[in-house]
Length: 438
View 1 (cartoon, rainbow, N blue to C red):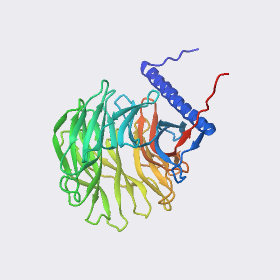
View 2: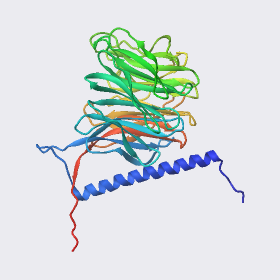
View 3: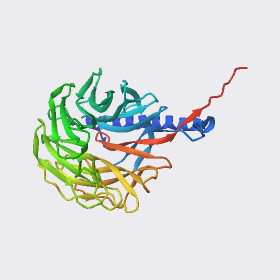
View 4: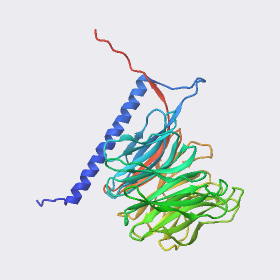
């Protein structure tokens, strides 16, 4: 009988798969043990008026390229208090890292966890004031850059921290007049640096613009802030992605067309790796109807076709749906793609990840049966060319309590997607019986 041997790379992949599965199995077992304990020796925590107390926790789920769930959802952060707004990224070796904000009653701080081993939480920043809305991207092996907005100086400013072996100092990215909020970050592996983008009120709170800053992989600012757009009215909620090997970023944001804050479009701008604007702003989705509201929610880079996929939430039918559009590295825009087709329910907040070995995307969003209903987390696959698998919807997280704020990444080394989200869960008081020796 012939002996089949694995290459060194294949052995490493199999080892990673086994370690990840053991870690997730152990985490799920811990969660099951906690649930069992609560079932036999706990009571639902209530406020003074008898209402149940709920909190937000961070959960994760592995999804295979065929759309099936691998194992059960597992807790990433479930301490007393609120853990929410999770974001996940991988370094260039495919190691996933999650960041989130946590409020334990004394203000919001930032925490993170590596997922390739047993989930181990540690603080990214515990400081005065609130640290909110974190974002993260991975750099070289073991390096990540986390960014957030921070009100330690009374108004909101942008800060960052390089997460690496040995730790690093906090980086002050933007501390200008007014508020600087809602940062996002993308890693440029060609030059081993990052680009941070944010919403900036230095020209007035009624006329925010989009700014950016380059940061080296050792945490040093490269040059100064530069403007992505200073168009009239509100420019908010930026997103950014980098095209590896093409020396260009795409930044997308929500553009208000007038002062009444009623209608908004999705616009984009190509930016060179050296921080120069390339061409004119791109009207990614700029319709003019009375129900047209389009807000970008994510940008994914397709390494096979060398183009970006911009996702946005769209209200053109009277119900929120997830739409997308491919944009080339030179700014050529293909036809819009309707990813969800909901006509009596809502689906928004779409995020995605691209699997180059399968040439497919996983698109994940928050689903609601009606405007005030609790949310579920659902997913849908789409080919790299934009063909949506309309016959399937993946029920990633469902239940009677609210699930929201998903994010996802593809783990190329093990051939799986990781999805993280914020789950509203009831708080329990745990009672342990006192057992005395005779």
